[in-house]
Length: 336
Image 1 (cartoon, rainbow, N blue to C red):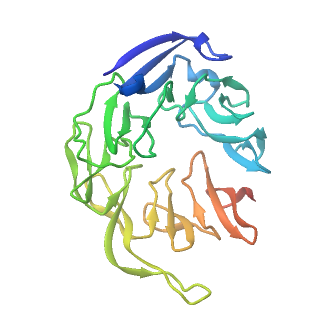
Image 2 (image 1 turned 90 degrees about the horizontal axis):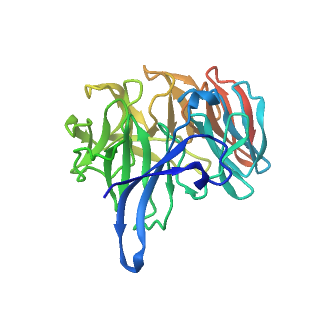
Image 3 (image 1 turned 60 degrees about the vertical axis):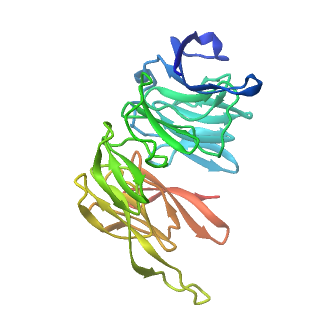
């Protein structure tokens, strides 16, 4: 059942924006004791260009020091002081943060612009943010929404993923596919059938046959896929023990053709021309030819966004985090 409500801004505590909010409720269901389960998505009718940030134009990066969070720019300069108990990336000009134990949205100046009077489930995506306004019950601890991507939202419910457009119309994609918490990217989404992974389009048509051990989203024309093969052994540790892996990640194009041969223990989708790779205890970045272009004493790395990527290094004080630019230069950290 799909209901649509429109409420005024007065329903939000200390809201500083103007306009209205439309609430989309999906999967409303009545159960004993008059509990109601539903997922609500709020749409801010607010021009994001007023915030000075266009969707996808990442210019600020969350950092932590001494249990306080703030934001730096690409040069590593602090532009929003370290003052929050927690903070996440900016999305469409707003970032989720925790201030005095409350979840809030802040703008690029660090000002709190939204104090929702409900629990926030995720950040804004294509003008929508998921919230819960009632008691949410789950059979397993999973995300209930994957956010809107390319006009489509994925809903995870009872171990199954279904997809809806912005008006609540269900896409004709079999719930027998999956489950996997992926959103549409470049018109395709990875699915699983009979223990093999492939890709379907928005019509539900199988665009790339299910033939892989695992698969991730397409990005910049390539998608990571996993294929079994001979064991790749890691270097021995201090005790002489060695770990190995037989399932290796590589990359395919939209035709399903293998472009970068499977050789990695894990591989992320490409972002800004580079992909984050993990092999044994080493992490680094490759280009679209499969060549290593940024490496260091990294234990973990995340994808590039806005010209920076988060890295973690192992030290005598444990794992420390920082940011590197595309030259491999450390612009922040490492810090505990």
